[in-house]
Structures are given as C-alpha cells and as structure tokens.
Length: 304
Image (cartoon, rainbow, N blue to C red; front, side, top):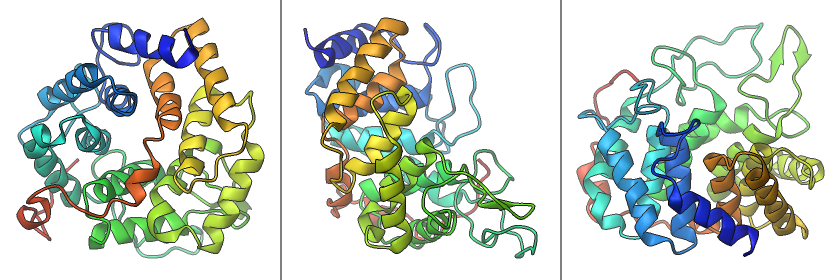
C-alpha cells in the first residue's frame, strides 16, 4: 500500500482521535474529518463529525477534549470539519451554533503601548477567555468563518488585519508577538502556514504576505518536522504555491509518522495537503443554506 492508503487505514481504524490513545480531542478529530473527507472516506469522516457534535455545548462551543471542556479555541476546527463533511447539511445546526459562538468571542483590546510593537487595539480571538488575542486561534477562526461564507463579516476582516499586523518585517510569523524589548522575533513555520492559509482569500497580493510565502517556501524541506511541514504546506497550498517536491515531502512525512506513533493530527494535516482540501476554501464564497440570514451580525458577548 502507498503511504496515503496506509495512513487512511490507520485513521479509519481508530475508535477516537486524540493526542493520546483512547482519549478523543477536538483538534485532531476535526483535522482527521477534513482529511478523510478529502480522500473519500465518507463514513469515517461523518463519524468524526458526530463525535465533535457530541462535544458541542449549548453555547455552541467545543472544548479541547472529552476530558477538558474548556477553553474553546477548537470550536473553529470543529466548524471547518462540519463544513467539509461529506454530508454538510447534516451538521447545519451545529455550524450555526458554532458561528454564533465564534462571533461572540474576542480577545481583550488594550490601548497602544510604546513597548509593544503590534496593534493591541485589534480584537481577534484568544486561546483562553479574558486574554489577549493570539495569531493561531485568530487564524483558525478566520479560516473556519471564511469556509462557511462569512469572509466579509467585520469580525473576519478585523481578524485578517490582526494577522497582517503580526507578520514580521521580513516575512513569516512568530506566535503572536513581533518585537519584544526592542528585539524582533524569529519566524516559525507552523504559525506562518496558518496565517497564510487565513490570508489567502483576500490578501494574497499584500507585500507582507508575499514575503511570508517566499520565506516559508525557502525554509520548508523534506526533513521539516511533521506538524510544521503540514501547516506550512497548507499555507502554501492555499495559494497554489507548493514547491515541486512538496507532495513527495508530504508522503515521506506520512512514512515517518507511521513508523513512529501514527499521531492522528500530523497524519491528517499531511493528508489534507495531499487531498487538496485547502484551495477550494478560498474560492467558495457561498454560505450554507440560511446561515447568513440566521446568524446575528452583532451577537452578545460570551466568554470563551
């Protein structure tokens, strides 16, 4: 069997998908759902979607895992999985609730400070309730809301402004800061890939985005760690700018993961790249039936 086939067999055979054996978690489950859907494994993808639905609270939020009901940053991952499910209409109610929740959540805004280089007045999305917005949860929320047809929503556009603001001067992203105590931080592959995925729809020609794509393409290699390779290639795939060897790197990454521990999230990210499940998200502007009509434009604030 090919590395792709072996990876699909591994994922479809698991009873749950998590960071540890037999403990389901929302992020790997949602990524697995997206990957399986992209490769035609409809029954297993739907099973993952139903697991996520069972974790959703009455507020629309989805916690980290079946053992940890908060914080709720993984709600964005669940929303994306329900959008890409083989029968997305089955999860319409869950998507509507998740959208309302995400639109009600924002990071703490604070006045601009001389010692902080980035714009602290932009809300974005936080990892944890009552804290500052960070790059990765903001990027995930932007990606998910774009995927359900809300690319022009004011919260999404503000999230994009935050991501652009957090790009480093020479391209690439750190995990949320740009400069600390006068020192410009170094970019990292994983947050850069996520940010570029989120910015691909509306800002692919922005100079900071172009520099970031160039930096990312120059720093991904066949030996890049699986998580960084997965997120990095997703970022490049979103603008159809994969290096010529990228798909071979992804298959090599699958081989390494399978030989080690078969970690579901890492397998799923690379399978998403190989299944071309990213590019359509930036092009599909049509919301699911009734979604924009039913979602309140300015819902009341809720904690994460």
